[in-house]
Length: 367
Image (tube, rainbow, N blue to C red; front, side, top):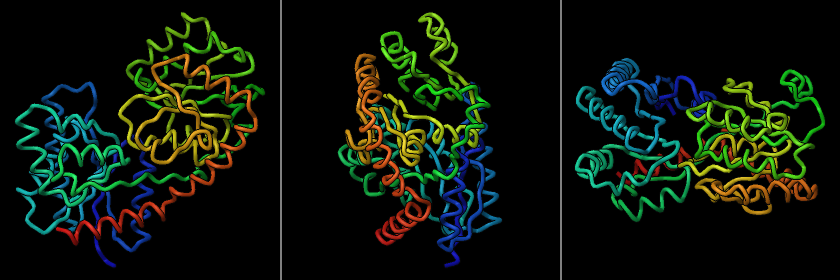
């Protein structure tokens, strides 16, 4: 197989995930090259964001002429901003690049309400255009695809479900790592990693701590930064729970990954529009017990109590009950560890890229 793929990868977040897919497709026999493709800086003005989209699209066109791939594979999000970027990019490619080209998009999270918006731009232009010219659109959960089937049957013909590659070997158990972060004591370590926004359930977590009867035996570790980080730190101080909370701020992915092998349980009560949250599935692959919410890919792959305890991410009382249940039950912790390590083997580079390739071949035949 000598087919060529040009793969759009992010410049900062989840680079390992993108490069794992590059390696996976290369191992299947594809000739792969990469180019930057991602959302603009969140605080840039509209004009600067639009300029960034056009500049990125022209860079892709230039690389297409140089590399002459059979397939362009873009990592994106299915929501108003991301989908508008995809529309502009693909429109410019079709206007400026005249060779035969299949286009695949993988969406890392979505806002399905885009299909119900009373917007001429999305309803009559963007979605029909993308439905016509995107060969295949990968989503990360059956919930997303099922919603698309109901709301946009034509578009759903291009929708397939996949997962992300998870490599637990990137997380190494190390007393030195814990010492470096001031966490070498024997406290039970509850772990959260992700963007620090309310929708990730971070405030719901800390509001349980004053009433958690085992708090003196535990520490709650938070890795990440984001729009609500300053308010989050202020509430921790207001609740007077600083000694039970360990904040790292932003850490590079390579360093953050080691927490999965060096903590005791993941607490991830997100109610954000997740796709396939990497913090959750990295925890699963490393055998961590999990407290989380019934969101998208989590519903596809996890069961209670085999893999997790379900909570309501907006309800601190729900989270408190789960914390107590998990902490008090060592047998439950061990069952989750074993089951999650087994489940994690479903997300190897080989399995994910082989399935994506099969779906791509199926979609190409149906065109």
